[in-house]
Image (cartoon, rainbow, N blue to C red; front, side, top):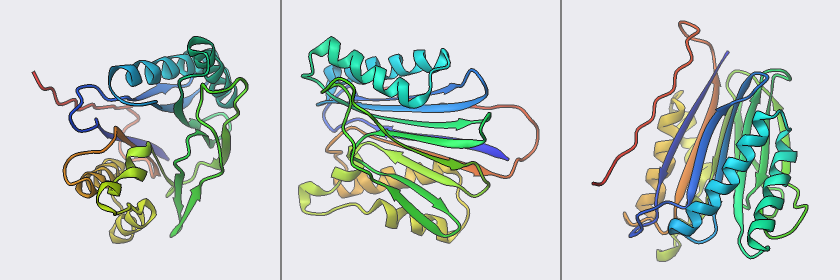
Length: 235
């Protein structure tokens, strides 16, 4: 069994800094976590907020704190720092090798999509972003790690795509069409979803947009862990 993770993200049109932050970290007792946050508004202020939240979560995960408790603590920390006047969405996606499960933690109105055996399930239980109130609880789901499982999480740039021209993006339909054709790698899925959102926004993204895709596949080749990053620069 092998876990593959891909990220695709782009900033809002006509801004120089994305308000989204995505980090991938190894868990202290085995496994890996993806932490994604979208700070309120856009630009440098939003980036500070999302980075603050992600750093807090990562530091707690490194100390062995459970995902749900880490999300609540990050929410309380942002509330204390900004007096409840600034919010951020937050997602954690953790492959826990101790329990052999995938833990999905949401403080984000945008759903998380789970695909397995030709079925796509949308985790869309109502939840609040972090930072507005003390004690804000996340929505948490846990599923077994098994070959064929695909999980997609994203920020609201996906859900808002196309609204400027009266269109909406159906992420479930996009994912289904990708998985029906063949067995695409996670990067191809993430890129395709982001590209569809950009098309609906006519090449000018209306919001910071991030897409994270995790797939559980059969193990291939050696036991070397690998990660690659592509960061286009405008100098």
